[in-house]
Image 1 (cartoon, rainbow, N blue to C red):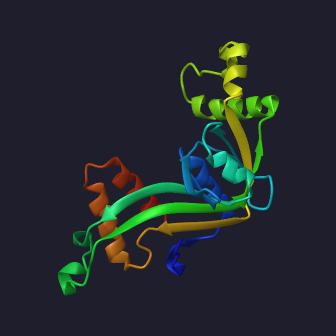
Image 2 (image 1 turned 135 degrees about the horizontal axis):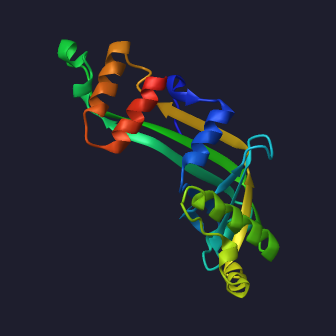
Length: 209
């Protein structure tokens, strides 16, 4: 990912928060089977390893886990808030007209080599943690233990787990930092004036910068 200096995010705690906020990151590898990509929910253990460790699972019929087992380097993309930025948002446009459209967004790229596993108890612990994480805010959270154990055992046979110790993290926060203060205010006001919730979310992030 190309990251100009103005948009670089290097604080690891901030990067981890962005990663944890991304509900469905994209796992990418390039190995003997060529380029493979899978959309997978992941758990991040921020305290395991220098940059944290990611945990997830794939369907056993998905050949992507085999690429991980072969040792192919993995890239995981965590997309954050994003919004189209119109030149009309910039007050400077009225002065010299020297403005073009762009896009503001947050993104984190994590790299590492995976370990795959299919131990039933380890898989059970993983899917239980994943379910608990995504059910936590529901009024009546569902838990893996709610399903019959023999049914869960059969489901576990159909997946392969993996862990990715993160060896490298690249973060990008493109929030108009390269524009004047007046243009940044114009972008925030322009985004808040739209009917799109993602525009509003990005405007609020800009206000915190």
